[in-house]
Image 1 (cartoon, one colour):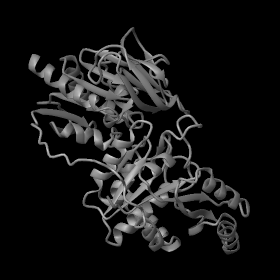
Image 2 (cartoon, rainbow, N blue to C red; image 1 turned 60 degrees about the vertical axis):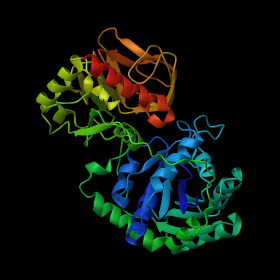
Image 3 (cartoon, rainbow, N blue to C red; image 1 turned 180 degrees about the vertical axis):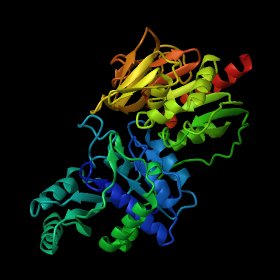
Length: 455
């Protein structure tokens, strides 16, 4: 299958690859292209900017959690109706889960997709040495198809000329753009960028990024490179089966809880009606067969969540009634007794016997491997789950609980276990991608049906 595509990678984090990728997506959209965005890695925030820039849902391609077949399937199925794919990388091009193998790296995914790569490099306070840096990326793995370089944070005209000559003449790579140091910066907070849905000026920001790309980057050359991408060899078959939607699953999805893989929602929506809830505005929870509460920033909105007492009470009643509830990270925090932020403590749902305390530095970050200790909503006993965790909150258990998972890699709740099980609620710090193992969504849906039939 022939799909015009390009990977926007970086030499490390915070070199400007999100700025370049989002700006390029918007610039291409304004030129009339239908752009399908993708994000390599376990990221929920960058895809929110992709969505606004292109009008299409961004999809995560993570080779630690997903196998090659799932990555190609996700890439292929979601490209339908598009003209060109822009794939934003994560961290550095070769950064991986263990720093030795390529597993989980942007490089690995670029090879799975047989995609050309554009490398974004921080050019601030560097001249000839930039050639050594770029050359290292070029020769480190010659099967990675690096086609050109975008130099970001460049100085004056003299500096720009020097770094361009160094890369072209010494690294033997095309310079596709030189972006000067400027005031426009992507907004960061803990866990990464501020979500697009929280920024009132997000549309102006993205339009400004598109203007920067059009002014300083050779967009025509990038389009040309994307259209030279070779066909992807695959034996994927079209899905024609229609499923009966006999379930109603509530998903709390708003500016507080926005960390969801769209593929997770899509898998659930094949078999159920998805009912979206707003934790700050809604007052009731009714006519639902299950709840799915994703991650996000409940600590940022803790005061507002506390004020919506009616909604918290209804969530408590839903959990206490034995209805199935699956919560990840921020959802876990929300279901607890309270969240402590900056010395102030705010009441949450109060169903789970724990409180969470926010810290200024990461409490846990990285890929996780769990083994199921018992049957639960998403896994059978002894099943292996692969996912990731990233949070600044420290969980403090208020009494003994039953855990669903043993932590083989990661931190979980106490370094050894994760996944609090109470009634038919399962809450953990683990973020799962349902396509990492199709048994997850099958188990979840079957358990919902079973509980519904028994109630």
